[in-house]
Image (spheres, helix red, strand yellow):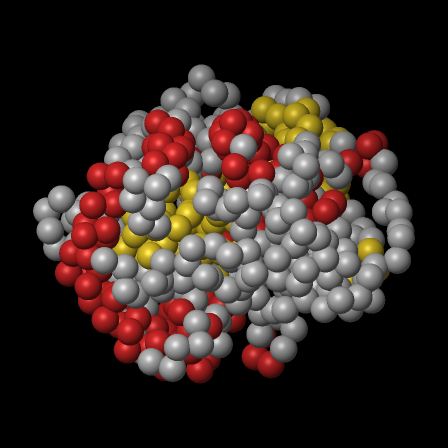
Length: 466
């Protein structure tokens, strides 16, 4: 959460602090629509050397893994326009949000009413404990106040940045208190997310392993304008997804992992930002990379921009501008959730054996299954489209790949994410099991199989911890 906003909890941002350089004006060279839509049917069956036989993930599990941060208590921002917030969240289609656990008492009943209204829409809330000294009665009664919305507690946010010398012991005491309250029958169904720290080795070492007192490991990290698959920009892979996940794997071994703050800022007056069009390309890939690496839920920071641009660590994070208009990233995430959403019982994954030829080591591919038996293959080039150091665009050359699917699962359609974040649905090549397509650093999703081919709806043991 950006500093200086005067939130009730006094949270502070823990990402790499941006600088103050100003990007010169530039115009991105647009890819031609013809190149973006290149999808050529290959009529000759070939023997392809690269074979893939993954067990697909349940598509809706990925759709359900996406959340967003909101601040319904922020005065002087568009968050006070609840109709706008409600409309935009419905348009996004996500099911989870994160906000603060505040004891507003009777002074602002609207805070509870608005979250409950969102809960009635199917958008549930993760609520962060404002400070270690929150009254026990508040913690005990909060789920009933947010009866339509509440789905989980989160321990105090980034308390190592509070300036309190005794923060480790106070945070441990708060965790013990929260964990103890959860033993009560009325609260036991609500999981507890652990505390997020500032992603420094010293902070994690000072707190130690307290995973016995929470259900879900919790991290905050930002990509600082780099592409999701960056190998990092410091010693030991510093800044990469793997570098950050290593903290959870060390200090909360075996626990499910959530990232409750991550994302990009696009205010080009601030260093380590990235242009809005680039963020629109990176955001779907970031969510897929997180899921691929085992992150069970990712909360994008945040829904709406701070209205004061040019302020480091505060400006440009939103999927929506301060004037209420949607950015490319908003449209890209909305399209992503729409394509993957498939509400209902989990299914036992069926095998999806396909072959892929062409492309280099930067080609990413992920297979998913829907309940009707159709398969989704997400494919993209994981490369940087923007150089944060030089502040220049990087042209990512398209690559051609050839895919052979089982004859019983021919191509049904493709979805391509465009420069403005919109998604183009195309049926070129439908009915063919062998396709060749040009891919780039924007996401492409191929759907294979007929929706009429249903599969058994067996519930799997694996589930996401809410």
